[in-house]
Image (cartoon, rainbow, N blue to C red; front, side, top):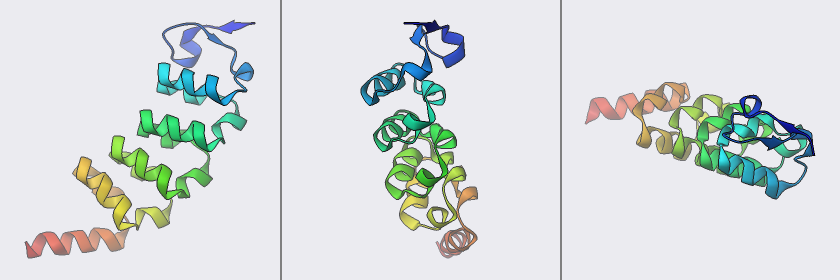
Length: 131
C-alpha cells in the first residue's frame, strides 16, 4: 500500500493514501488520531454522516469542511458548536435562527453571538437590556 507523508494530512504518522480510505471505520480511526485528517478524506467519506459526526464531535471547527447539506443538519451543527462555538458561522441561515443551536454556542463562548440571525441578536440584546 502506498503512503503519504504526514505533512499532507496533518497527522503525526504516515497514513494510507486518502483514496484508499474507503472504509468508514478506517476513516474514523484516522480522524481520532488527528481530527484535521478529515480534510484529506475522499468526498464519499466526507459525505458519510457517521464520519462527519465523528469529525465534528472531535473538533467542531471541521464544520467548515463538511458538505453544505450537513450545515443544515441540526444534530451535526449542535455537536459542532458545543465543541467549537464559532462553527455557528458555517451553519445554515435556518440554524443561525434556531434558539437551541445559538444558545448552545453562546453558552460556550459569547462571541458566537455575532453569527446568530438578526432576529436572535435583537432578542438577546433586548433581554440583556431588560436584565
